[in-house]
Length: 467
Image (cartoon, rainbow, N blue to C red; front, side):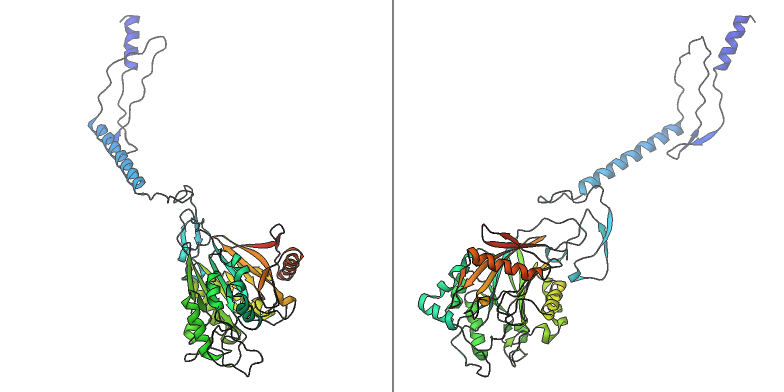
């Protein structure tokens, strides 16, 4: 064999594939033969081309299984994507955040189940009555509601004289400008408004108001009154029950008093802008025989006499039925500008139990405002429609609390009472004096007012806590 023929024979032998005899397993889990190693190519000589060797039936079967698996996965992904819920039209983002983490959260503590709930932060669970679950992103906020609150309204003495000389609407004219625009107005009916009944002459002070003021209050925008106070039975049960009937007739709801204890302790509810607001009142100032019982009319006894636990339980129960809770207490010491410890403890307990606003009275003088754990407390409004016995008793305010999903903003409007007890809008130096004094009283409770001298009013704001 010549050198040329030997060279060709060696080259042809070097590129002939050799079966390895080994079997390996593919990624799809199908056994197949190991692919033969690439044939070496001798330098200086071009690589020869030829037909691709046929694939084995086992390899073709494995490929088909792989493709079938990929198609099934793609179909499953498509089904899941189509079944996913779309976000609400009013939401600001997807129903579930793409990178939602997992956190342990607890439902509204007013409806505590005792067990934490684990859920994706990006997919908050709905809380009772539209409230937010603590630790989650806020839901679409409801429209805010404004609640105007004020102090004592009575219809006797100089107020009665003003009604007879100038009419009941004149008495309410100035405060109507603030009460009427609010979604709800809540005041303290300090006297019965009736011609019925007989006086409790054993009391040092007793009175009965001109019933003509009741429809005037309705025309001025009043929606709810509390009669839980130390004058509701001044003319005994007939005058109290007649007053409740008169209020109901003109569409004003009465809380804190009734024909028996069950009625006196019943919350009343008002719905505005789709927001349900619960109201209730109690009195710590309790003359003998004024407490409503199972068989007699009277007032709802406050925590000083009925026990704090009972009041807390009532607030917690009402908070499950409403979005906002407003309560009033008749308490404290007359003729003082600062609350006593009992008032502070009861106000804090009410907020802790679920109240949003604590709007109170009895001292006849202004006391301070306190922001506490996402709620707003007014310790005493003083008198609103009431003949003043001193300069301090003639100074009062109306608080219009705008409550949104996250904030409570109180706008404070100052008033001065004239000699008959008719309120007039305070202006100039009188407005500055009232608001600066209220700021000083509030500072003692860790709260400061923001003044708006251009409009002669003030504001205070608190962020609502998750409940």
